[in-house]
Amino acid sequence: MVEKEFYRIIKDIVRSEEYLGMKACKHHIKGSVYDHSVKTAYLCYKHHKRFGSNIDLDEFMRGALLHDFYLYDWHDRDPVHRFHGFTHPRCALNNALSRYPDLTETEQDMILRHMFPLTPVPPQTKAGWLLCFYDKAAAVSDYFGENKWKKEADSPKNDEIKISGLTFLKHFLIKSKTTI
Image (cartoon, rainbow, N blue to C red; front, side):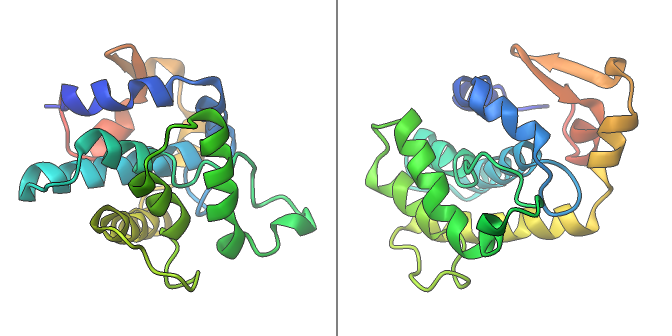
């Protein structure tokens, strides 16, 4: 069953206009930045539930959702995006702080340090280290999993399911082995 708690925690962020705009930005060849960020947050959520943790769950989910909140398509040939892998964490943090000025130090650490070791300073928090790991796991899945970007473009709207007011592709729910 899809965890209602997960959707309760993420719904305010993923419903925002800026966050929904991330659906239009490709990420890791397959899927969108939106898909990747929600997948990463879900992996963090599953870790928290399976292994328990003293990390605040809402804080953990918010940091995970906002880790790639840079709001541009880095596949554009704009020279500004040339060093995207090194620079996007700072851009994501700046965007997140402008939208959510009350970000905690843990959330800021998660967003700013999630690209370690590509960026030289490692995470300073347990949540940051976990996000770093699950972001890379989601990226591997993005590269070697099914091409969701093409599938979304080719699929009819009736392949979508609404859960708690959020819209998800049936494919996402099947791929992640969750049920309604």
